[in-house]
Amino acid sequence: MIYNPFTFILFIIIFFWIVLFFVMVQINLIALAFAEIGVPNQYVFAALLAILIGSFINIPVKRIPQEIMTNETRIGFFGFRYRVPTWKKKETILAINVGGAVIPTLLSLYLVAKTNLWGPAVLATLFISFVSYRAAKPVPGVGIALPAFLPPILAALGSMIIAWSHAPTVAYISGTLGTLIGADILNLKKIKDLGAPVASIGGAGTFDGIFLNGVLAVLLSTIFT
Image (cartoon, rainbow, N blue to C red; front, side):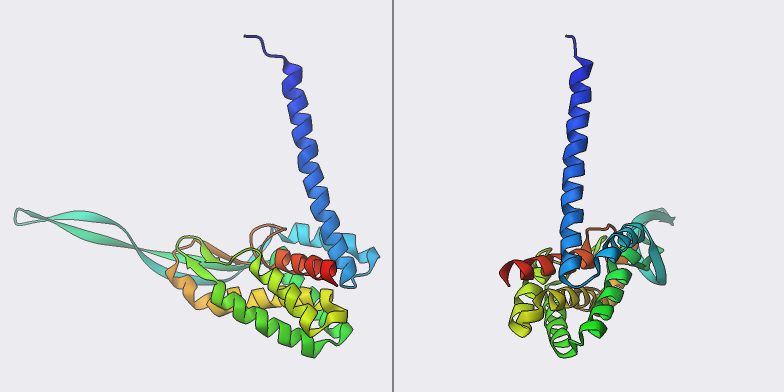
């Protein structure tokens, strides 16, 4: 059978453009979200670049020792062989993702100070923190898992009820800080029993975790207000 090499090249080109299209859509949506919450246009690109670079940076803040039974060994004693569990000490490195947690948190605090929406922001953040804490589940070997679309949807709905005229801003603040507090900070005590090698607050990628919740909350609240 003869294969046409140009067909394979064409497939690679089409696949590249599809990936590029989805990346550009995500970037445009994020830029739109930033514009809705009041980030000046001249700073949008810098913010996106900082989040992109920061998504590859995890700052270790703590080592959490863990004791996990990994296997068993056999010991001979007076002609008898016994199975003895072998315990191997391990540890989980707790880290904070710069692009997924640090920058979104700083941006949330900046928005609160800029808009002076302390009351609505605190109230909405407490609500999302409670929901995130109740919905978050520990997954052995992985970390703390949270239903992906629950926080942003509730953050959007809550912000429209609490602060209709400033719904996108409150949605971003509550979606970001509420998820950080409820899903991550309040569940830190559970990490020691999960056996995960790394627990990264904010996720491991740019469009992930806390950052994604904030952006989706803004977009949803913008659509319905």
